[in-house]
Image (cartoon, rainbow, N blue to C red; front, side, top):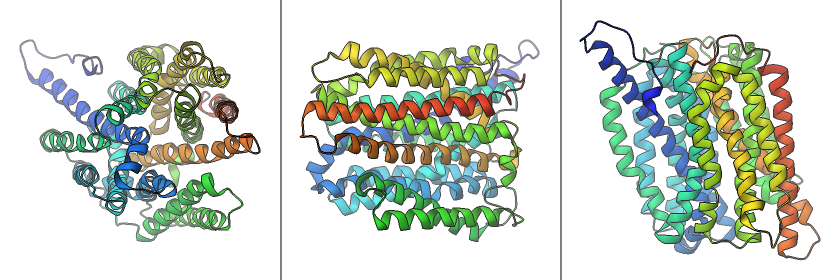
Length: 483
């Protein structure tokens, strides 16, 4: 896969210089992609492992939700600070610190004897992910030149996101059904150690920007993102009428507004507002949030559809995502050629259309139907769009960004990813619950609620398509991703 990312550089025949440089960049890309894939797999593996975690550690039904919520809060809360840290202190140094934190926390989770240990370690793991996720993306700006090299690397980076999320559900089903939920976390330890050793040798340290840490910005962004994410997460179970939900979400939104106000007035902002000057970049952030809101909801509802309505086992449900996973992977291989021929805006518009159509089709599934027609075929369409969307969204989100702002731009991409998925799921779970309210518990009632949620996800994709056509497509200059 990586051999196609960079073209063979020209040089004097018999000289190993260009060849060595190419191999070095390919090795760096493997390290970056593997680091990002580790985060993605960990996030989705835990979803299918939740029932076994509940039984093994003695979580209460309500307490179990905090296995994911604690991670989400720490990840979202520290995201902007983690993103800017690489710009200020050097991306290699910050990457290694985040990787060590994530690996250590994975070991603690895999060996956790009780709920308290699990939740504390998940919070630390979320902080590590908040450092790793934006830093891995920013490292591509350090090691790959603007233009063909970087655009190709970004395409494969974004495709990893599409493959990793669905592959994690497959692996999670296998681990939970055949081995143990602990394997999903413990396997991060040898992988993390190997990546740390490889990164120490391969990565080049970026020049620190030399600015001071925006302490006020760090505090307000962390508390603001944390409060907003907490309010959104709580709304999924307590509803938007709940006073604590409204208070925490309102305080979070107010702190984020204060954060943005301060960023416009400080000399060394945590988030340079000049990143929003580009209409295309701003549209890409909004479109990414909408896309992830629909896709995270798709994973949530389709898992319940396969196990709760079609009565598949966790292992079968895990394998049930394979059609989407395979198509996502195949499209990722062809994506550089598609982007070169059509441009990121047109490819992105097609991706939103495919996912919307697939979600509407999937929403028709009900009790007594077979997997192939009700789930498998719609997943082919969803996989097609999933594989084609994230690369152009990522390319558009960091296009034209100055090197000193690469970390902050990467943080915005990840913030849109994180908040979009969290908010989208919270809203659509409310739709799901409303559709089932008053109906006696049955497969038919569950299928009706899932159908309502999936139709809501399709609507998010339609709005994302509109944002793409209005903002991203007009900004899609002739500088397209070469194949």
